[in-house]
Structures are given as C-alpha cells and as structure tokens.
Image (cartoon, rainbow over all chains, first blue to last red; front, side, top):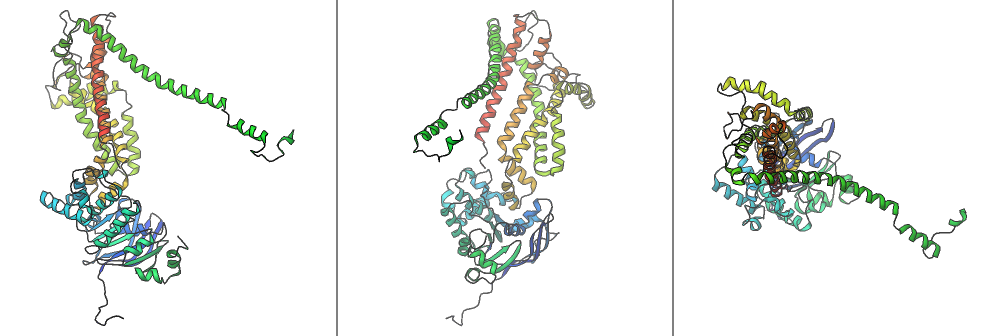
Length: 263
Length: 319
C-alpha cells in the first residue's frame, strides 16, 4: 500500500566504474567492471576469496600505484566534478586526499592517540593547534570512541584494544572529511562485540559520507549496506539493492554464494 | 618365530601390556644423546662468558696494582698523560678527550649518512638497486681498518689541508671522518633491516591519508623502527670508541687534552697500541697503565651498551 505521495528515491551518483580492468603484471584481476556508487549510501562488495573485491576497492584510492607492474584500464568517474580517478593526469596523492580508507587489520601509527587522528590534517599542512584539537575531537566523536579516549589522548595508540584501534583508524580517516570512505574487511580481525560497534558506526557514518565496504561476512553485508555487489573471478556478477540481492538474486551464481552452496 | 605376533595386540592381554610398558620406558640412548648435545651447547656458551670474565679479571687485577701507586683522583682529574716520563702524570681525561672527540666526528658523519642511506634503500630504492647496493655497502664494512687509516693519512688529510691550510698532518678530524665512513655500513645495514621490518600495512595507512613517500618515511617508518635505529647507533658508538688503527695511523699519538678536532691527539686505544708495541717490563707502572686505560674503555662501552638495552626496552616495537 504505497501512498501516491511517496517519491521514488533516486540517489545521486558519487562514483561510477566504467569498463574497469585491472592487471597485476600479466594477471588480469578485474574484468570489465561497470558499477555505480551512490552518494551517502553504503555499498557492500561480497564474493569468495580472490574474486577481486579488495583489488577493486583499492583501485578507488590508487593503492595499486604503490607497487610496480600494476595497470588500470577504463575509468572510475568521481562526482560531482566528474574526474576520472584513474586518469594519467590525476595525482594519486590528490585522490587519497579525498578518499579515506580503513584496513583489514587496525594499523595505528606508533604515535599518540591524538597524533594518529591529527595525521591526515598535518599531511595537509594544518598546524593551528586549536583547529587540530577541534577536528580531532570531532573525528573521535564521529568514530564513537571519544568517551573512551578523551582522557588518554597523549597515550600511545598501539596500547588500545583491537576494536578501539580500528575505531581510531576510522577517526583518523574521518578527520580529513573524506567524500568516500573505503572499508577493506574492517571487522575481520575483531571480536563480535567490537564488530557490532563498527557496524553500528557505519550506519551512523552514512549520514555524512559515502561508504564502500568489502566484507566476507554476508550477514554483515545484509546488515550494514544499502546496495550490494557480488563479484566472482574478477567480474561483477550482480549489483542491486541489498534486500533484492539477498531475497531474489537474479543470477544463479549469486544465489549459490549467498545460500552457502559455494564460496 | 613369526608366530609371536599373530594375535591382535590388546592391552587386556598380559604379555602385550608388558610390551606397551617397554615402549614407554626411558630410551637411555636418546636421553644420553640429548644430554651430550646440551653439554656441548653449554660449553660453547661458557667459553664466551669465561673469556669475558677473564678479560675483566685481568683488567681489574692489573688496574688494582696500578691504582695502588696512582690515586684514582689523580687518574680522573690530572690534565697530563705522561706515564713514561720521569715526571709521570696519569690523567686519563687526556685520552678520553681524544676518544670522545674522534668518536663525535665519526658519528656526526655516520649517523646522518647511515640513516639517510637506510631510508633510501628501504623506502625509495627499487629491489634491483637494493640488491646491488646493499652488498657493496656491506663490503665497505669488511675493509681492514689499517687501510682506512692510511686512506685518512694519505688521501683525506691532504684534501682537508687544501681547504684548511692550518690543519696538521695528523688530526682527529681526518681520522674521525674516515672512521665515520667506516661505520656508515653498520648503521645503514642495521637501520635498513629495522625499517624494512615495519609492516607494509602501516605504510599503506599513511599513503592512504595522502602522505608522500618522504612524509611516510619520516613520520611513520622511522618512529616505528626507532628501537632498531637506536640499536644501530649504539653499535656505531661502540665501534667508534673502540676503533684503534685508523686513529693510531692518522690522528697522531701525542697525548693532548683537547676537544678540538683540528688537533692531533692520542685516544685510549691508540695509546694502548703504542705502549703494547714498546718494550716495557712486565709489572712496571707504565705497563699497568695499559690495563687502567683498557678498563676505562670497557666502562665507556659498557655504559653505551646498557643505554642501548634500555632504549630497546623503552621503545620496543608494538606493531
């Protein structure tokens, strides 16, 4: 019983992969991927190990540029300015200034809690103490860790627990106001309680930032995401709204994977 | 005879039980071999410990007889070192000043250069460059120090004299600079190992924040590897303080209380060489000075080693 007044939501595009191919040397890891990323939504990438979902994620902030022999083909358009993130004239450092990333294993720097969160701001040349303090506090609140660490800011970050470290890494990424936040299996090294906290946080965060998350855990994809993409052997098999993908997948391979017959 | 084992083994059978307990009995031969190996390992460890103890014993016992005739206050405060003169003075500060000055010059070269090389090799060089450059660098550490000594005396000193005409033929500066070059490979190699041990995920975390390679190297990799870097610096200091031939050849051997690297001076080690090469009678006071000087040297390196251990414990990597 839909009311006639209800407006069909048409989300804005934040990014779009167009005919994206990726090569590790001779080895083709991504095959002709076309996929939209919608603004202020959570998009989950699922698929069996080695299907290329992390490779795809790491293309967005050009992490592959750090290692020799890697090559992109095609485009990732980034909106609103319609820049091709993979363009030869685009500086990967500028790309990473706009796109934050949270890794599989928490990787705090061997610095204080404060300096970890202030890191990205310092990279961008911010030296004003008051601005740094404000933004660090704001980011820590955004990552739901402020109450736990507000009296411990001068302590070394590696002394925090694993779940706290991961939320600190999220705060670190949030501090510079990224437009897109990439999560590469952010909870795979965490216990269920810490995982719950991160998932809740992702729910909160999508109000301010677009999120792309790789996960091995299908329940997690179902819980946190608005859109889901199923990848297999470097190909994008199916993309759609999360409930649709999980309730009535169109492709047999997607169905096999999410019902646990494969992967 | 083959019939013995025709029935199925079962613990309920009395004779089988006997066999089982036989298998569980101590294997005397294996035990004996284990013990033998343990004894060999212990002996090997004991040799090095005993050697160290022996050295300390000789240094201390000879120094005790030295301090029976020279007061320890004079030893530490006298400003002259003339143990072989009729009017003998035993002011160890004279030798310590030479050792510290030359070490300072050496480390002023070796620590920055070694660290920069390590940063380059670990963070910037591609694997092909590193595989060629690192062995060559380590080869530099294998050159006999006497060669470095003559290199300092015959090549570096004349070059320095071109820029500083007042520089004497023997100087702490020239010897210290070459000593620094000698120490560079130790610091570079150990620091590079420490920096490469920093996990890639930590660098990626920094790159993902938009940091450059240099910013990442300085703000993430170096702090993460700091205990390894400190250990390499401590090793460099120990090498500098204990270095002998370069100083004996290029720094001159005249005792000289100075902290000016432009002057020639003897160090603790070069004094020991000088005296040991002479024909001093056993048990004479001149002979015993060697041991007092050696003990001082041991104390200095001990202090640095303890400092190194403390630094390691304080900044242990926790990634």
